[in-house]
Length: 120
Image (cartoon, rainbow, N blue to C red):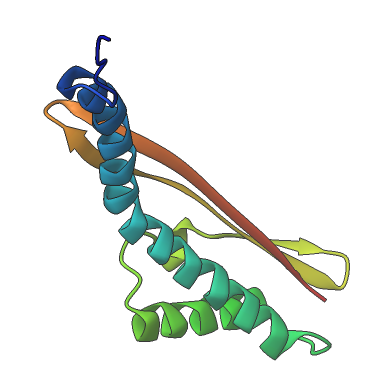
């Protein structure tokens, strides 16, 4: 009776591990920029919660956001990159930006971010 070997060959392991490794590496490269986005989103939500129900001016919003960006150490977006528009009795604050992260050799990952909050 002939005995057949079972299992995955070296080539089989490479076919499985290379794509999994690339996805894990991409996740490691993208984690810092997503953490930065979470800081920005949290800042805008905190400013919304702080000023909701109050009469506020656009300058006060910009100043509050800038202070919180300094505290949170946000570097990718500046207060002038924010779009603050008057909407009826309140304001809409929009932070839209993109970030590029080098991946492998001359390949980079480009991620678009957008966060909008309404302060009424």
